[in-house]
Length: 406
Ligand code: HEM
Image 1 (tube, rainbow, N blue to C red):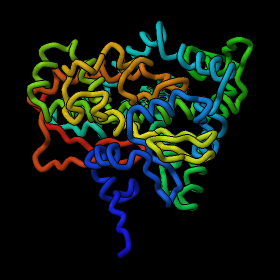
Image 2: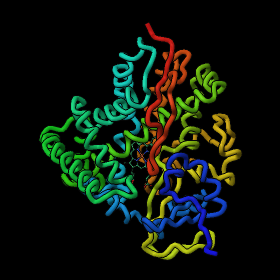
Image 3: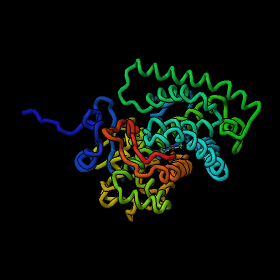
C-alpha cells in the first residue's frame, strides 16, 4: 500500500481559504513543513520563527535579491547589513518617529476626515475599498511628498510590486508584468528625486536625498529603492489591520462596547488584532548553513518561510491563543509596538519593522475618529466575509452599516 501524505499543502486552496484551521496541526505534527513545488520550508513554532529572525548569521535576507530587488529597482533595507543598514535605517526611522510623527498625525487626520466624509451621511461604507486602501496609500504619499492626485496610478504600479514580492507561484508572464509596473514607478519617481535634490522640502524623499548619517549618503538608486520599500511596506499592512480591527470588534460586541467607552483600550485592541490576525503572514529568510529544527535538517541555501500567523497562536507563548481577547494578560500592549513584543507581527531582530510607531499612530488615530461616528456599526445585510492572501492576508472587503451621520 502506498503511504498517503495527508498533510495539508500550504499552497492548496483549502489552506488559502482559512490557514488558521491548519496552524495547530502544522505546529504539532509538521513544524518544518516542506513544499516541494517551491522548495521552501515553512516554520510554524514561535521559538523556531524567533530563532530565524534573530540569528542573522545563520539566516540571511539573501533571498530578497530574487524576491524583491527586481521590483524595488535596487537593494532594500532588509537586504543590507552592518554600518550601511544601521545608517540608512536610521534615516527612515527618524522620518517616522518623534516630531516628524507628530506632524504626520495631522496628515493622518486630514486624510481620514476627507475620505470618510462622503460615506457618513449614507450610513454605509466598505472599510477596505472605500476607505482603508485609499487612506493608507494617501497617507504614505503625503509622508513621501508625492502628489495624492496620482494615487490611482501609483496604486496600480504598487499592486504589481506587491504581487511580485508576495506571489509564491507566479507565472513568468505575471512576473514580467509586475517588473513593468516597477519600471514605470521608477520612471515616475526619477524627476521627483531630481527636483528634491535641487529644492528639498520637509518630506521623506527630500530627507532621503539630503541626509547623511555617519558619512553615508544615498544614490538615486538607493533613494528609489527606499521609496518603493516604504510604499510597499507601509500601506498594505496598515489598511488590512484597520479592517481586521473592526471585524474583530464587531464579532466581539462586549469588547467593542468597552473600547467605545474607554478609547485608551484601543492600543490593546490593535495589538491583539496584530497578534490574532497578522497582516504579514510570511517572512522569508535563507539558511546560510544546514540548520536543524525539531529534528529536521533545513539544508544550507534553502528558503525558510516564517509563519507569523502560526507562531502568534503558539500555546507555548499565548494562553488560549485562538481567542481574541484585548485583556489577555500575556499581550503586553506597551511592548507590542516595540522590539520586545511577544507577537511577531512586526518581525523581530535587526530587520524589525521601522514603521511600528507610525502604524500604531495611524491605526489608533483613525479608529478613534471612526468609532464615535459609526454608531450601531454592523455588517451590511447580505455581506459575506472573505479573506485572501498567503503572504499578506486581509479582508477582500468589509461592508459596514451604521447610523447615518447628519
Ligand atoms: C500594521 C502595520 C505594519 C505591519 C504589520 C508591518 C510588518 C512588517 C514586518 C513583518 C516587517 C519585517 C520584515 C522582515 O523581517 O523581513 C516589516 C519591515 C519593514 N516595515 Fe513594516 N509593517 C507595518 C507598517 C509599516 C509602516 C507604516 C511602514 C512605514 C514606514 C513600514 C515600513 C517597513 C520597512 C521600511 C521595513 C524594512 C525594515 C528593515 O529591513 O530594516 N511598515 N514590517
